[in-house]
Image (cartoon, rainbow, N blue to C red; front, side, top):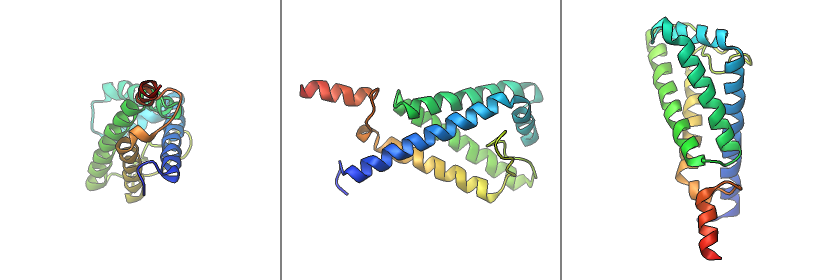
Length: 158
């Protein structure tokens, strides 16, 4: 594929918006179902119980900010870097949980769907990570009114 192939650009824009919608919706549902979400965090048995509400608040708000960033193409590179980091953390946590044989809800889609931790949830997380890495790799080809890098390039052409 050519560097600026229209189909490639369309696919990148679609992935950006798709990830943004996913993170915005899951972040909002986690925030508005905080007790369920903090219960899910507690079930992982990875952090002290006193930190569950703090972790839940941080994760849910991060997901909302990431979603807004990706949907509106505002600070997209930072949003994708945070997405990638968060997904790597989720993959590690899910792997540890699967290895330890815990039979708990994922907490991924609290308020929408109560999914048990499984190999399937790990695969979904890996796919989301792959999408975010694809967007990061081809970041310069994204459009959007708030893409600062593209705006600077356009100014230098004018």
